[in-house]
Length: 429
Image (cartoon, rainbow, N blue to C red; front, side, top):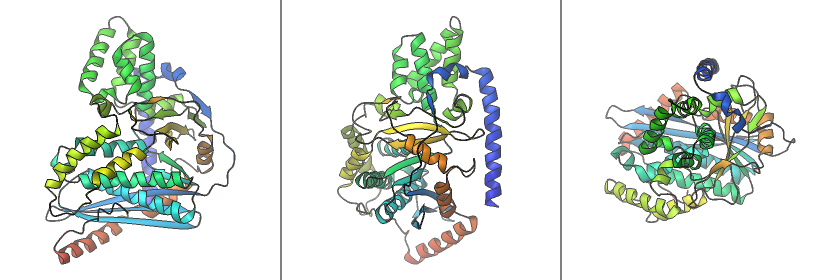
C-alpha cells in the first residue's frame, strides 16, 4: 500500500512540475538563463567503495493534556549491516523545530555508528547539509518565540551531533554525500539571474545578490528590487522579466533545471559557504559573533529550564560545532528524462563555512565526478532514486500502526514516572 501511495505522489509531482514548467516558460525568460548554467555529462569510473545510506522518520502524537509524544528514528543501511537509532521525548511545549532537531540527532548518530563500526567509505545522507546547518543556526540566534526559545539546548545538541558526524567522516577518510530528492531551493536560480542583471545594470543590490542567499529575505532589498522592476517595465522589458522571475517564489531551482538541464547531466558545482543573507546583513558572519548571539539565546532559554541539568560548557560545544562545519560543493544531477534533479552536497575538505567571508559562486575545479558516477550507478527509477537511501528509508519510516504502539507505550511510561522522559543532553554522546 505504501509503495502505491509513493507512486501516486511521484506521479502527482510530475504532473504539477509539468504544469508549473509550462506556465513558467510562457511567462518568464527561463531559456535566457541557459548560457549561465554550466553543466557536464554524468560519468565516473566504476568503484568498489563500501557505501551505506542513512535516512530517518519523525512521528508526533498529541496527548489529551496538550503534550506531544515525539518519536524520531533513523537507520544506516549498508551491504551487510543495519544500524538503528531511536530518540523519544514527551514535550510539554509545542515547537515545530524540536521534532526536526531530534531527527537530525538520530540520523547523525546512525551515521556515526556506520562510520565507526563498519568502515564505510561513502555515506549517503538524506537531506541538505546547508539547510540543516542554517536552520539550526537560525534557531539558535533568532529564537524569539517561546516555543523555540524553550528548546535552544536541544537545538544546540542537534548542531553538535551533526558536527560530530562531519568530524568522524573527516578523521576516518570517508566521504559524506548529502542527497535531497525533495527540495525548494532558489539558490542557483537567483545567482544566475543576478549575473544577468549585473550585466545589464550596475547596482549594489545585484552584487549583494551574487554574494548572498537570499536577499529577498531582507525587506529592504525586497522593496528595492520591486521598485527596480516597476521602473524597468517602462524602458527595459527583458530586465523587468528577469526581475519578475527572480521575485516569483513558485519557480525554484528544480523548475528551472527541468527545462535547462539535460538528462544524464549535472551542474558545475557551486562553492557555498556562509552566504545566508540574514546572517550577513546582521553582521553575524563569523564564529565568534554567532557564538555570542547563541549564548544570549541560551541564557534566555535556561530561565525556563531551571529544573533541567545542562553542561556548563554548552557555549563551547556550539563554538566547536560551528568551527567544524565546512563549506560545501552544491550541485544538481538529473539522471532520468522525467526526473526532478537531485540536489547533491559534498563537504569541501579543508574549509570552514563560517570564516568571515560569504561565498556563493560556481567552482569548476571541484572534483565530484566520483560522487556523480556513484549516484548514477545506484539509480533505479524516479521513485527508487538511490538504492541505499531507499533501503534506509524503508527501514526508518514510521507506519501508522507502529506510531500508535510507540505513543501508547511512552504515554504509559510517562504516567508511571510522573514526568516526561527527557532525552539526555549527553554532549559526549
